[in-house]
Length: 458
Image (cartoon, rainbow, N blue to C red; front, side, top):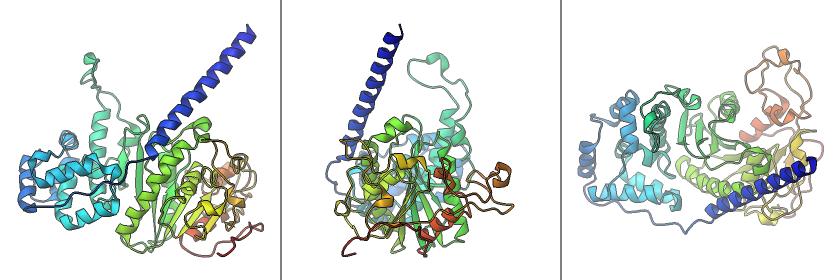
């Protein structure tokens, strides 16, 4: 009996890995996108076309601000707006929006941004309320408009989460249920999203969130989370806390974008496959061009934690906008990245921080296997500058990244090392946290004693 059980378990494990492998191939197929399509041109009397769209909309208001307020005060109205789709037969403006909505993944975000620049800020603000589902997830659309559109998305998603309504279950239609907690906490909050899809990741949700002011910050960091970066996971709030600690400490100088804008793996089996990072890396690289176009020449730091390090590393093999790159307890330099020549800009300033005893070290630098692993160890990669990890703060107010007192946990002042160091590098005011912040601000961090060789010619 025990032998049969062992065989069944082995077969189940193999079958599970095959299914994950096939799922990975599906993700890889997403990365191999079609060539970029052309952004439609604006034609005709735009004010007249917009007036027609406003007249037909379920919300009536004198200005977009009032329309947005009405939608956020009425969940049924928000739902009706989310369900609205631009009809190509409703004029050239509606037809252009329909094209943008259907081809958003195949469009150059910089060209999309030029489309909205020509459209103008007030007309764009109207469209963010009239067609929030179109604007909320559209790369290249102005960030301010996407933030407003995603407020409507949240309002409608919370409303939808509280009732059963689906085909094949007529007996449940209209029945109330508890709202999704991760969405409910966002109602009336000041959190700002330039993308929020509650239904991606098989219902776990994906997002791109901004902390700080992108319009006035003198430095910008794009932070890519580790595995299980889903709205339904604790990581949704945890990376908010981490990003906020850096933005708050910089006193207005720094804006942090938490980028989890793709499907994400969960668990060590999925996270061992490279296919999710391949899709995410391409989308991240495209996002950096959108960010640069909308924020000017503000220096951008690309920072990835754990699995997110594999994403930013692989993104460096694409055409990427970043002034510096920071691997934080990173899984690797990216799938099949073992030499600087694999990167589009080998001489880009590059930093890494991994504490002694961090379990991520067991997967860093694994040898090449097709579709498995995440390339070279960032701590040993030529040209990388390794940051010192130091110790945790020992002050009476010192807290971890959940806000829990370090003194109460009995770890105040200890060295950042061991199993828990994978998260301890983010504890505010620790030496590791201070060094991460220094890189984000373009300052000089404290370096570790051991450093890789420099890249010849850099």
